[in-house]
Length: 139
Figure 1: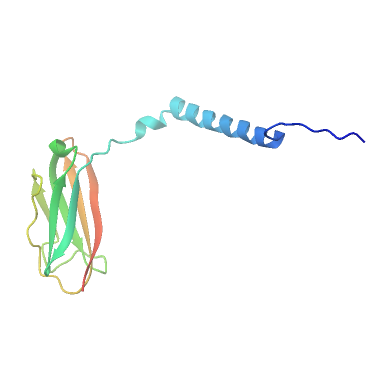
Figure 2: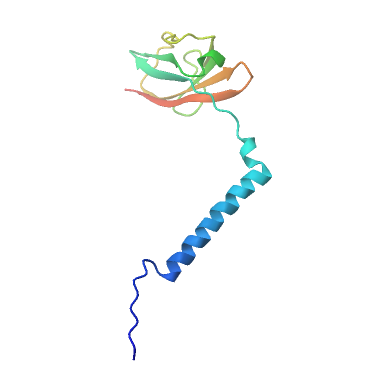
């Protein structure tokens, strides 16, 4: 019996797997190009806010971002632990044409529990996007 020795770096099965993987990637890229799936992605704007408890109240602060000049207004909604709009304070408000550093001021007098703050930004072109969805815990 004759022993065969080679110095190949990879086996045939690994080469086949790599060839199939490259073919799948090229096919997926071609499908995106030909069927236009890449054109259906909406533009995303970048602005930010934060929310925190200050004593018994919630304060929402606008921090700006690269798309600050495109922002029309902010809406926020506060939900209680059961998921209902919080009735103990204004549950939904807005801030028109906010400047960087603007805040809502103290909102409500919250008792202990879990609260969810959701802030939606509306831009001049009419698009809206959620820019903050945060759970706050008041102990």
